[in-house]
Length: 121
Image 1 (tube, rainbow, N blue to C red):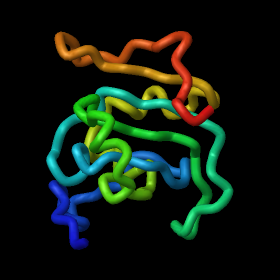
Image 2: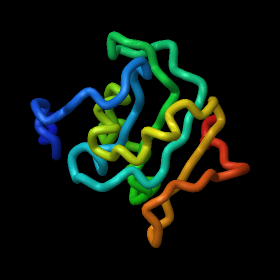
Image 3: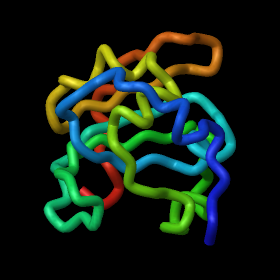
Image 4: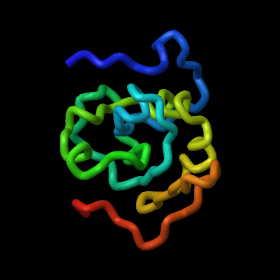
C-alpha cells in the first residue's frame, strides 16, 4: 500500500536529533491531524527501521479501536519527522518511559496523563 504523506520528504527539516524511531498514526502523517496523544513505552528491540526505537507512540486521538487495531494505519518514523508534523511534541521528548500526554480538544497545550498505561502492558 502506497501512502501519500501530508508533508513531502523535502519539507522535513532537522528539528531534533538523537531520538531514533517511533510509531505514528496515518491520521497524523497522511491525514494531517495534529498529535493529540503521545506516550512512551519500553522500546521495541525488533524494528526494521535501521535505527533504535525511542519508545514514543504518537496518535491524533481520533483513532477508534478498529482503526488502531490495523497495523497498516501506523508506521515507523524518525522522531524528527513527527516533530516536523507537530513541533509541540518537542518539549516532551525527554520524558521517561511510562510518560503519556494529551492535548485536549479545547487546548493547544499538552497535559500529562496520570495512571494511563498501554493496553498491551
